[in-house]
Image (cartoon, rainbow, N blue to C red; front, side, top):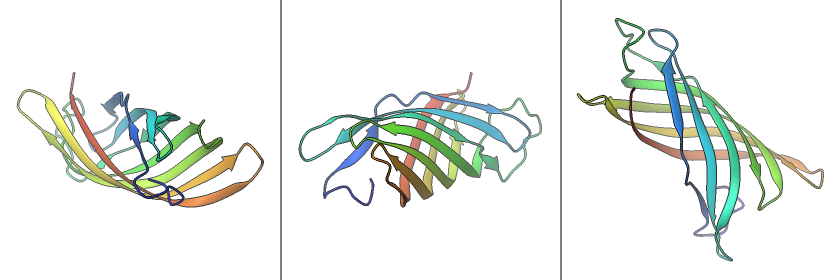
Length: 143
């Protein structure tokens, strides 16, 4: 949700393809596709598309870099998107504290809260900064 959205308006990522791989025993690289359905009072349509890049830093180091990551983490994030509905490009900078649950069959469930700011660059030349708050839930399988 953005501060300028009316009551009941929000965005939902409808094609959340996530690629995450360990870089070291505590650092991962996570790439997430963004294709948001804009839920608006005047009608719903695809609003944003882009990519999010995160570097989750896990508090407990793994014995082997190749192991799947789990536990408490904090991730700096950069997000680059185009909002075709409101006609602006965005650069998001935020931090995501979260927790990654890993199950026996290599399925994982990750929860995170995103806090930070977004830079809006409108097609008409106007620019501004806005606050960002997001909830991130990822379900998937480590390959």
